[in-house]
Image (tube, rainbow, N blue to C red; front, side):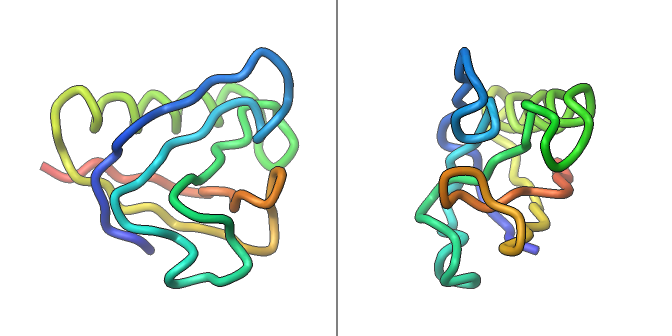
Length: 94
């Protein structure tokens, strides 16, 4: 689990990067060297979870970004999109 702020969100028109990502204030690569820096993927493309769940996780990242709240993110370095690790869980913290 990584505790961080959400700095940016990304949605791509194709399945690059899993279709959607979030940039975190804490670098996932510091904990999991196999991950590329800063970003995690929610796999909105449906590769590692169903697309609806991926977009719901992205919604939580957008909520945290818009309200300046912290998140806890579970990062899985065994599943990656273009080198960016998959976030299998996101909790928004009050």
